Image (cartoon, rainbow, N blue to C red; front, side):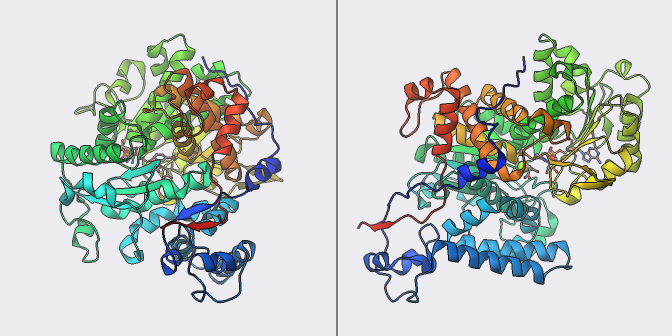
Length: 607
Ligand SMILES: NC(=O)c1ccc[n+]([C@@H]2O[C@H](COP(=O)([O-])OP(=O)(O)OC[C@H]3O[C@@H](n4cnc5c(N)ncnc54)[C@H](O)[C@@H]3O)[C@@H](O)[C@H]2O)c1
Ligand SMILES: O=C(O)C[C@H](O)C(=O)O
Ligand SMILES: [Mg+2]
């Protein structure tokens, strides 16, 4: 049964939350094995003009920098000034020009000085997340060949078969905690982008550092290049990936197997997040590895938790008890890895609430794909979608393949949720049909990314479906002015609210696998995070400004679930016994304490 207990410290005021996380601890010294220009060229350690004179002496930097020492705060202000003037100078130019210019200036800093980069990112997450993450990251992937200056992360290709076990030792860090892996086959809603999809693991890991405080020296973005079926890329002379069609079947799996074994051999406790794999491989690899390695699929499992929190929030927003969730009619448009992940988790929760009656739970959920409503009449039904196919006699008045409009018109659902990857699927006609919903506050979630691929815009949703709706989208939209001083609130229903906490909680627990129980704990924590007042105002998720706080809470919930399942083997200072004896509040404090925060550490050279 779902109990929405308040998170341990969720009653902290927003400003206190911010202050709590911006208080830097006294930095511990950092041992390095480099000197001179090698340090200046290493973004992990570089402080640019910020090296104090004593350190310049110790590290052989004297004379390699202009004499004046500039403080971290001055460097920070200088960067922000350049950023703001770029913003001013590009005003009125097309979105793609402006956002790529912003991405470039941030990326240059990332390449040069990671401490300063992550500090500006954390402090300005609301402004910068849409640049380094969704939606601009999609544009960056599309333009990767042109934007490429220096590599980031590792690239394992089909040509590296048999070599991966040794290649993994080419990575310079001794320890890696968090890996985000893609094969580039379904990048956001943009399709197969081959090797160019590396932008996604980079963006996701930036969120890990900013939101979860994973040390950037312990992250690794990885591209598994098994070819591409994108003809345009194959014909592009500047394309940087393998120019061959994608490997299939056993050949494909043997590459992923080899990579997973190599990672596990060097870093047995590293967590691997699978990201943006096309559906068949997303499900297959999850089944294949989840009991053997510490891994999860963000598009299936992270998205499901965020959507479930949104669905439960919708019930609360309607002023109903959570138990009323079992009466909600939910229409999901998009039967891919994300849509099926959401439906699976929603049905698990519904069925728990209705006394393990899975049949009753399924009856309330409807699934559509590119060919419309999925029923048992469907020819060549995808096995993953088959359990959700409707018996025609249970959907009277509807036909196999009914369109989103027909389905909404007939069923008057409480929730319409899109994960189709297709922009505009919730058109005027569909949105207007939602006005006749059986709910007084129906919810519309247009979760596909990036912005162009959202099923509808926020403005259209409020305009056509009415001012009372709850609205969520995968990519950020501005709140909508409804007139008379009223505002239509836009929720960013994006898995970024969960994946950083799933990774952090798992890491600190020392669990060697990620179970459904741990994922459910993450979703429950997010669902309980908002106050009733916020929920009444249509606000289902925290502001991205407090992402570090919610991530600490989610991380603690995941860790505690691992303890309850006897999976927590401990990490660093805290062994399994210590973890077991921590109270809920102590667990949150422990997780927060273990979040890395960017400050210049004194550097000490060792041969
Ligand atoms: N907001 C989030 O956190 C989040 C998380 C994961 C995925 N997504 C987004 O969801 C989208 C889908 O991801 P996926 O991994 O499930 O992709 P997928 O390719 O596995 O599945 C796409 C599904 O949409 C269906 N579809 C295609 N055209 C359609 C149409 N015109 N009408 C109805 N259905 C249609 C397909 O038949 C398929 O079932 C992507 O845009 C992705 O960016 C968002
Ligand atoms: O990347 C995102 O913004 C969310 C999600 O993982 C997606 O694939 O769209
Ligand atoms: Mg994704």
